[in-house]
Image 1 (tube, helix red, strand yellow):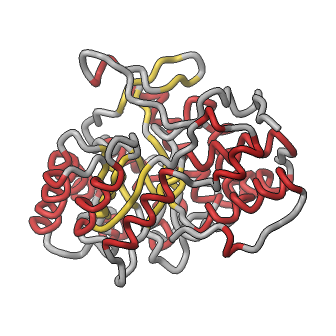
Image 2: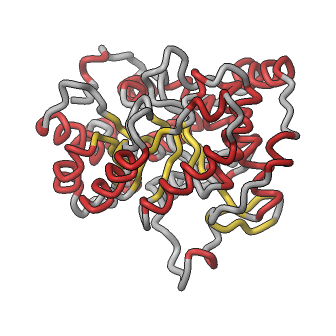
Length: 353
C-alpha cells in the first residue's frame, strides 16, 4: 500500500528534512512563504520596547481556539499515514538523562537513521521516501559520539547548552558552554533563558542575553527555550517569544521537558502567532519547537495542524518545525503498523533504545 499525497499537508514525494538552499548569503535565502510574501532567515532586529509592552493576549479566546484543533480537525487512513510520516521527519530524538551513556546515544542515533521497522516500511510502500528524524539532541558530553554515529546521514546533532535546564549558571560559563559545543561540531544549540528577566520585565537584559548566545553560536542554529511552564501567563510567553526573535533566535522552543508543565496547545498558539506577527512586520521566518510531554501519535497531528492553520505549509518541514519527543515515535510506529496490518502491536516491539 503506497502512501499518497494529502493536499492539506503538502507533497509527500520527499518527506526527508530539506537541505538548506544554495545561496550566496543567508540574507538571500527564501526560507518560507507567508500570504504570498517571501521570508528570509531571521537576522534579528533592534529591541523594540513599545512593541513588547503593547502585546496583549486574550486567554479565554486562545483556549477556545486551541480546543478546536482537538475537536474539529482529524485525518484518516492514507492521509493520517502521510501526516505521521511528516511528524517523524520533524522530530528531534532526545536523551537528556543523568544516566546517559555513549552506548545509549549510539542506539538513539541508530533509531534516528531507521525510525520505522523495515518490514513496516515495505508494507507501507515508502522505501523511496528514506524517512529519518530531523536531529538527535544530547548533552555536550555526547556531541562527538552522536556526530560519529550520524556521519553521512544528513541528520543534525543538537546540544543543550547555556546552563540547561535551569539557565542559572553565570553568563560567561553559559557562553563558554555554547562555544564548546559549537567547536565540537554541533549543528544546533538549544539554549535556556533566564526566566527571572521575564518575571521582572527586564526585556533589555533578556535581549542582550539571547543576542550574546546567538553570537556564541556562530553558524550553528540557535533554538531558544523559553520554559513556558514557568512563565505564569500567556502574555509573558508572547513577550518572551518576541524578544527572543528580535535577538536573533532561529527557533523558539516551549520547554526543557523538565518543568512541571511543558508544551500545551494554548502556549503553542500564542508562540506561533508571535512568529506570524514577527514575519509580517520584518519579512523574516522563525521556527517553532514544542517539547516536553509529547507522547502520542494523535498529539503529533494536533501540532502539525496548528502549524498548518496558523503559519501555512511552509512551516511543515524540519527547517521550521520540530517536535521535541522520543516516546512519541513508538506510538507513531504502532499506528503505522495498525494501518498496514489492522492490528495494534505491543509498545515493546517499537523500542527507542
